[in-house]
Each structure stands twice: as C-alpha cells, then as structure tokens.
Image (cartoon, rainbow, N blue to C red):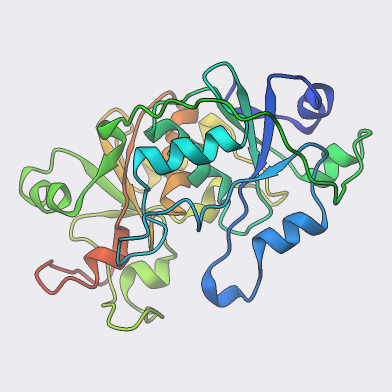
Length: 278
C-alpha cells in the first residue's frame, strides 16, 4: 500500500473485509482530553480504537514506551488484525499520533499499514457519517516479529556520541530543544542530546494539516543540515512525535530509527551530557 491514503480512497474502501480502520489519537496528559471518550463520541464507521497509552510497557518508568511483543500481538489479535489485513490509521491529535501507531506496527514487523492524509470529516462527507456505534471483528492471530533496527536504546545513543554513525534529529519545538522553555516533567533537564539537529514535527505539515510532499520534506531536512542519505535516529519528548520524522523519511524511501526513551529518559539521567542553544 501507499503509506498515505486520501479521504476519497478510504471512503471507497470502508467496509472491505480485509480492512481495519484504527483511531490512534493520543493527547499529552496535561491536555485535559480523553482520546477514548472522544473516539466513542464520534468515529468513522467500522473504526476501532488503538490505545497508545494502554499499548505501552507497564513496567517502564517512562511513558508510552514500546510494549513487549506478546502484549502488542494480543491487542492486535483482539482487533481482528493478522498478516493478511490492511490497516489504515488516523488521529485527531495535534501531535499526529497516528505516526506513533504506524511506527509500532513496523517495529513489530507489520508493514501493511498506512495513514490517512486528511480529516475524518472529509471521509464522512463522502457518504460515511461519523457514528457512535462500536465495531467488532472476529479475533485473529497476529504474529509480532520485533525489528530491532527500528528502535534505539539509551546505551546505543550514548555510543553514538562517540561514533557519530547516525545523525540524531529532535522533533520537539525550538524552545524546548534550545532549553529556552522549561520542561514540564519534574526532574527533567532542559536542552537536547549533544550534536543533534532540530526538525520540529509541525514543520512537516501544510496549513491544511496535510503532509508536505517529498520534495518539501527533503528540502526541510537538508535546510537543517541533515544528509538524508546517511542513517538517522529521531527523538522527541517521549517517543511520540519522533515518529513523525520517521514517517516523513519513509515518504522519501528512507528508513530511520526511533529513540524510544527520548528526552524523558535522556534528560532525567544525570550521567548523560546535555546541550543547550541552537
């Protein structure tokens, strides 16, 4: 499948027996919004909820970390997803959290997944009014096959400080990257991983909220000094918006890794070096 699908494409495919539509909306804890409640209040016909918060490692001290394969497989099996299924993701979140769900699928070896490039309202206007009706599909057997090349640990990131084998780019805002804006999590230092670049996630979208095209994405990254032909690792605050960068590079035909612990882990570790400024 193409990595991006249009509202018209999705409107035409809704109801296909092999298609699963998932709402992967997630909000920051201080947003005061409940993504599941909003999903239950209005969603596309046949859509199910992909719960990013629940699909995280319950034993990690850091939020929204990648779960173990069994936990992910059980959740996807319950949603009726297996190796023959096509999955379309959408979200209604400012951080474009469907990219996190997309990356999670890829991290567990599933690549029949795409993202809606547009709004659910646009799909609804094409003959599929939003609904409150719950959807359910027969359970399947999802086989999770972890791909370690898509994930980076803090030890790998520390080693990269010396080797410089991979470029690191941070999806947070300029103010957070430079340390001008204080972090809201208690005990979290400001700044960024030394020698990293800064490509805020919001820069990858046009005024209408749709993805910029490949040429614009390439220009954006190159303007920051990033060589898209060299290996890249994306980071952010807690591993959510970093997936925007990973997906953007996928649109360029490039694979990138994601540092799952991101600044929440790095910034709270007294042994890691921190840099401030541009």
